[in-house]
Image 1: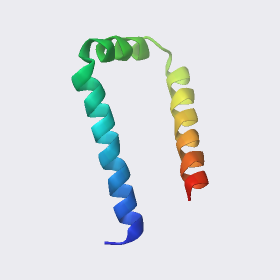
Image 2: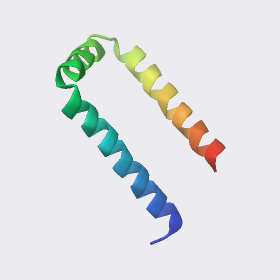
Image 3: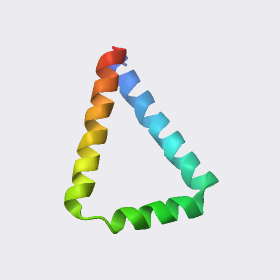
Image 4: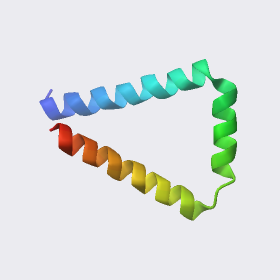
Length: 64
């Protein structure tokens, strides 16, 4: 397996660990968070998603 694919799959695995841990440790807080997100307009959700994606891209670029 190439180094890039290994790093990608490791990153995906870590996302599952972190997100799954949040749902397991704080289910009611996650339920409230989801309800707040669902109450937001689509444009705001899209902007936050793009901001998070760009921040993640910047972080990956800085680390490498």
